[in-house]
Amino acid sequence: MGIFIMSGEHLGDGYMELYNDSSDMDYEDMCDPNEGGHFEAVFIPALYSVAFVLGVLGNGVLLGVLVQSRKTWSVTDTFILHLGVADVLLLVTLPFWAAQSVHGWTFGTPLCKITGAVFTINFYCGIFLLACISLDRYLSIVHATQMYSRRKPWVVHVSCLAVWIFSLLLSIPDWVFLDAVMDHRLNNNTQCVRNYLKFASGAVGNLRLASRLLFHIVGFLLPSIILIFSYSSILCRLRSGSQGLQKQKAFRVIVAVVAVFFLCWTPYNITLMVDTLHSGNTEETCGVRTSLETAKIITASVGYLHCSLNPILYAFVGVKFRRQLLDILRSLGCKLKTSVKRQSVGTRRSSIWSESADTSNSLAI
Image (tube, rainbow, N blue to C red; front, side):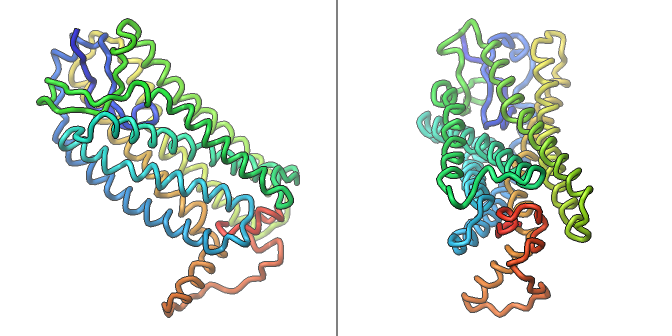
């Protein structure tokens, strides 16, 4: 039995991969897997390059400011530090996937496993850290309860460590199944894929479905529920107060956080669900399959933009972050003019998250 690789699926189930699926042998033989190759070879390198440059620069500046101001870190700053690291490590894998879309995978199986696992770890880590930040803000603003405090800094570090360990566990399938596999239907190009057939030739469909369900539930649905619940409760709490201008700023930031998350990831999840429903359809035309593969490429690439936008959402909207960044630039000899008005750091209203004394001291907000 040969290995048949479904071409064109990127960021599959939360990570970069192609799927092996023996149930699609007849279909794969009838349809030309190279039909969308030119689009993929042009679109992916272009978009991934933009996401890589913007994301690495933005997160690099964010991490630099946080490290420079490490003596005044808050709980939120610690989470954002880990979030920035996760985003950078995920973005570092983009050049490999861009190269694969043009020339195939030329880096061997060991680097295939490492790169795929790094992508998976940091993808899930980023999502979970966003959930942790939203829960921390929910408890501090809505219930005036500090889940984390400066008196016990080890608690937040243990939470971040738990997130990394859990994400590492979710990457186990990559270490087991990812292989550099040559496909004769793709001009003998080698692809970094999950090769389920080498362990379970009779259960490929079930393994693929389980992997997709894991991504949908753990990587999207659960974080979505946490984000919606937390920020909806925060909005209700702020609307019942009398924060004035600060309340309006909080509305804008909260809406931006939730909107960008769903704008980036909802299209891909919907497309992947449709693809899962169509995967067992033997009457599906090649045109429908090509359209689905193209939609997965586009929507998956949009998901990468979330890593690039995180610095904007969690840092560049903050007055204190901009002020700290300008101070660092001035210290390097740059003469900058700014219209940013100096505000008192000691007041609780110096942050849009003014309901939380600890969170309001965050440089990022």
